[in-house]
Length: 184
Ligand SMILES: CC(C)(COP(=O)(O)OP(=O)(O)OC[C@H]1O[C@@H](n2cnc3c(N)ncnc32)[C@H](O)[C@@H]1OP(=O)(O)O)[C@@H](O)C(=O)NCCC(=O)NCCS
Image (cartoon, rainbow, N blue to C red; front, side, top):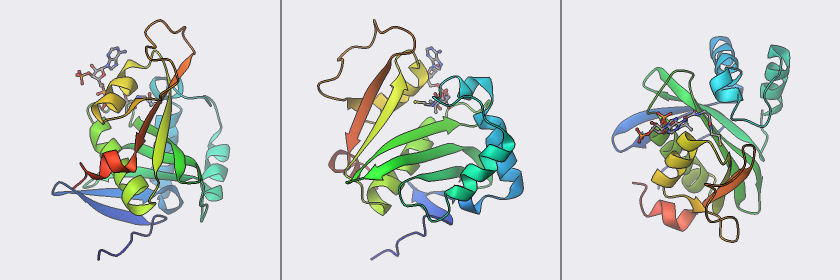
């Protein structure tokens, strides 16, 4: 029986033979806190998020507040020592949570690895049942990624967001049974 990871620490996960590190925000070095702030406030990432502007001191307070928190988890994901991006699970309650993701500013093609790491943490470690993603309808890169990772538009919501106005969101969902079949 594998030992459960300490999700507040630096977790090493084996993803199809690759060693991926998920470093909880409470365990970031000072340099990593700065790097994450630079990424998260860069226009290419901030424009896709609900909260767009915040100061470095707000960022540091936010990180301090995550220590031992059980409803919200944020991790910096690294492949060997290369930082790829950030993943998070918000509002964990009754087996459900909202996911969040961003690749490091200027990094392309890391989305799939970030999502596989997130699935591992959400379904294998936290044993959640369902995760959802709220995404701006015109965020093509994120929507392509979610679909490639098996997420589907939530039943009962708009089936086709192609005609949504800018600023409207759609909701993708996936559950543990779907995902655990594919995670090795
Ligand atoms: C969402 C995100 C993690 C996806 O990462 P990724 O899967 O590595 O994707 P890339 O950015 O390299 O691009 C993915 C695909 O979308 C395409 N794409 C990117 N921007 C696009 C655009 N504006 N219009 C059309 N296609 C676009 C890329 O060409 C690529 O297609 P391909 O796989 O067929 O070649 C990354 O784009 C990101 O961090 N975005 C900013 C933050 C964000 O939007 N987070 C999600 C909030 S809900």
